[in-house]
Length: 313
Image 1 (cartoon, rainbow, N blue to C red):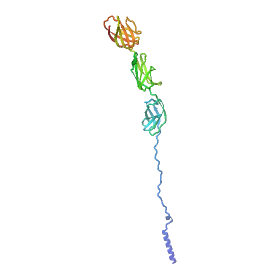
Image 2: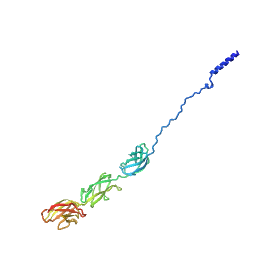
Image 3: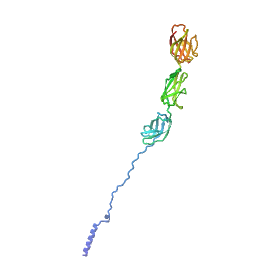
């Protein structure tokens, strides 16, 4: 009986041993699936291009309307040039050259810098804007008779960039003139000797145009010869024209008459100077019958008029 009890106890212990889990099995480790967290990469920042750099400005100064070329680097595809606070759109050539035209600005020193389309600006440089230089292109007329009067002496100087306060100089001296527009100045040609004289325009004492020549004509010209007053033994021939002088003489069929102050007796023939457009030839004919003869005027400087054929006693 005791043996049976021991056997039964052994069987129960064996059964419990089979059913009871081992210590390892009692506490199984639960393995959790863990995914490694990798920090997200920050978005790549675009590289900032170097600021515009200027190597040279050609020319280094200029007047409004002049074309300026700026050479350097970092200009990008679009850029503007600033002169002070004035923005000037510029043409970009291969990112290394800018071309611009100076706008209408007062003369003076301006801060010049380049601003790229992305807003990046370069170093500031000084740039001198010069006063607009007057340009004299023509004179109308360009020839004036020394004996012209009134409106005949009016000359129009044509060109560009004439300021309202522009001065007109005749042989280096300022004369009275009237500025009609930036392209025209009107003046009256002053009395002067025959020959070429210089005319120029100045906007200020340091800013003048190149001079042009205004010719003063002294060559005598005969426009008309007519019979005037008639007396017992002589009559008057009126010689009209221009550029006659006090000491002008006439040649009648090769014979010289006058030449000293406009009055000289030569076998009773006399030449009287009235003004630069008229002389009177007092002719003493030996017959009242008309005949043909030639008249020519010569000035003291050796300038001759054309020959005029006259039919008179």
